[in-house]
Image (cartoon, rainbow, N blue to C red):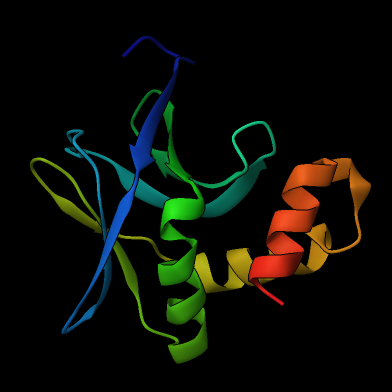
Length: 124
C-alpha cells in the first residue's frame, strides 16, 4: 500500500456465533489493528470502521446488509469481529462509536437525507 492510500473493505454478511457477531470480507487483514474509530459514508449509506496499517488506514464499509447484526450486537453488548482471508480482528469500541453516530445522525441533515432517514428508521 502506498502511504496515504485509502483502501476500502466491504462487508455484506454477518453471522451470530458463540463469541459474538462475525462480519466477513474477502480481504487480507494481516498487520491491521482496530483504531476504535468510525465514520459515516453518506454516499454509500454505510457505517465505516477504521483499521490501521503501518502506513495507511483501511476503511471497513458496513452497508445496510449488516445493520441488523450491528443493532443486535448493540442490544446484547456482544463483540463484533471482522473475518478476513487470513485473520480475524475484533472491532474494538464499535458499540460506543455506533451509538455516538446514531445519536448524531438522528435529525441531522448534515449526513444527507437518505442516511439520516435510514438510520433513524432502522435504529429507532
